[in-house]
Image 1 (cartoon, helix red, strand yellow):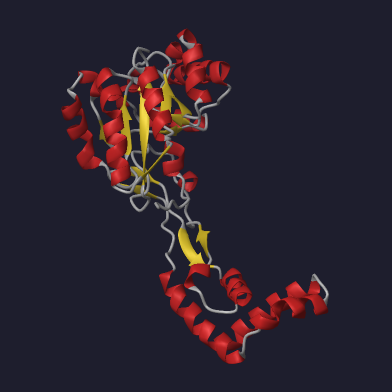
Image 2 (cartoon, rainbow, N blue to C red):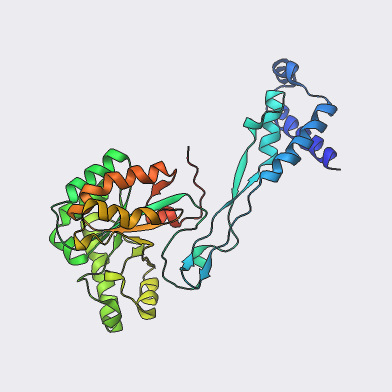
Length: 314
């Protein structure tokens, strides 16, 4: 039955092609590429074997430690596209196998509102998240490094900083980096009233939108301080609450070597790396990027890392 199914599939493909041009033209162009039933039978076996390489998708979930973890798309062979490629080539060629992504049944947005500390551990991508609430001295150096290395980061901007330095905020956005919210006045969010929590969020959104034209979708609470009210309030404004997997602790002004050793052992699939526009970060960022690339990991924005889309590393 499977062999019959493949033969029928190939016939449908042939019919589709023939139906879109004259039969004479089709036969003239395909004379040397007609395949026998035996060949198709062999292809069926090859396709069955190739299908064993399919990768099932991974559902998003709430982890007792890491809280909300995004899902990751699976891979399945596209039998129709693969059969069409083999028919065109007139032979079986594994390089012509076509795979398509299969999304998980449970996506991140389907989970209950929860903080996010990391991407899916199966996804070979990490993110640089840069919280900006003070100081501009080292921003140009950091932006230059990111541009030189072809890396896009996610900058979480403090609302009052954005109002004070709208041109700097605009430069970050125009460089193609993702912009997130870091509240307005860098408070401990869990100590605020619900009204103040919402004000911190809305005022920051307004400041960022006015300076950059961007409406944030991610929220990094200052100092990582939050409670359930904060996460739910952010969710009402369609903001995901983002924490981190690895912290450079650069605000303590460590030496470049200490900065690097603080982070390097934690670099792996789905890791979110926290830093600020400080001198040790400006000095050590090139080394970190080189190290990440050396581990065959992609570097993307936080949203890219949290996406269930697959990433391949050449």
